[in-house]
Length: 74
Image (cartoon, rainbow, N blue to C red; front, side):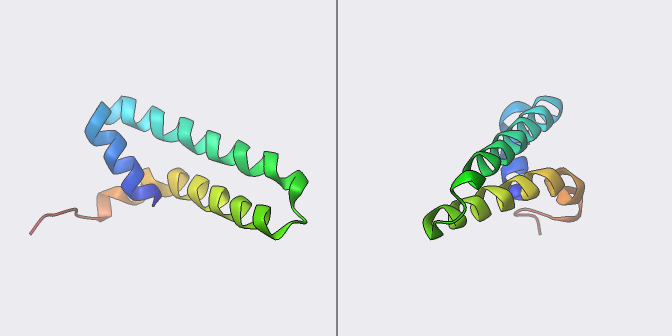
């Protein structure tokens, strides 16, 4: 999900601005996950914490592996 998100940001905003926006979104998802840790003991919030954590991790590693993937190329 992070790889595709980075690909979309790069396509919309260019390489440098897409890179910056990608990492701003990474920080946003990470802070969302941290803010929900207080409500960790409810199952509903555990799923949201995992969702935000995985999105943050995907955004973090997305730019590192995007070069190895080909989107719609033959």
